Length: 206
Image 1 (cartoon, helix red, strand yellow):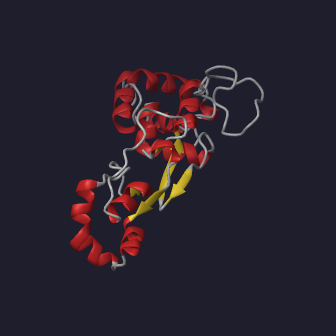
Image 2 (spheres, helix red, strand yellow; image 1 turned 90 degrees about the vertical axis):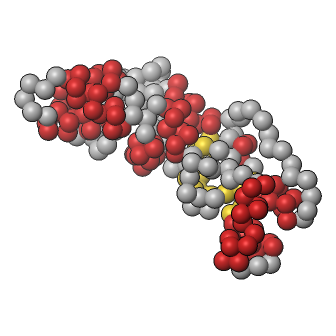
Image 3 (cartoon, one colour; image 1 turned 120 degrees about the vertical axis):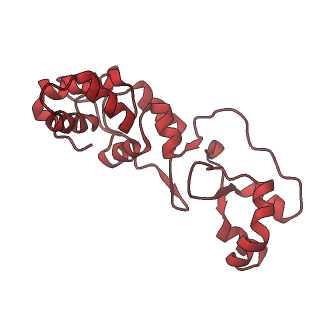
């Protein structure tokens, strides 16, 4: 998480500020630096640091503390977003591609979403409230034919039903889908029921 959308920096730019080649920085300086300044995205392959903390370290000054607590402008990784929404990071990426989330903000290659947007998606999930299920920035349209209309997971449920041997209990399919894609087995049971009763919607890419 990047607290309050604060400016960040990666190790290539830190090495440039220090006036050394990146390879030298990583071999000689990075281990001590990383022990003093933690990456803001520990669950990501991208090593990003708070710029003010990095500059203080390079200047030999006390490293300032980061803001505490949650804030609407915090920038969250796909995993952090997924944890809040009860889905998987791959589903977060699918939602962003299909318009159920915004494309997010990309910083040094890391794709991030504001806590405000994620909370809005959480409380306005498909079928909830007047605006439930709308794509980001999309005006409210006709009433949905069912709560999961437009949900990318519906396509996954449809394909799972088609692939399952005849007579397989829906609860078993739902449990397998929950283990693979996140959310609860009960949610997947509802998705499976919807996919079976609305086959025309079951081919939505997942």
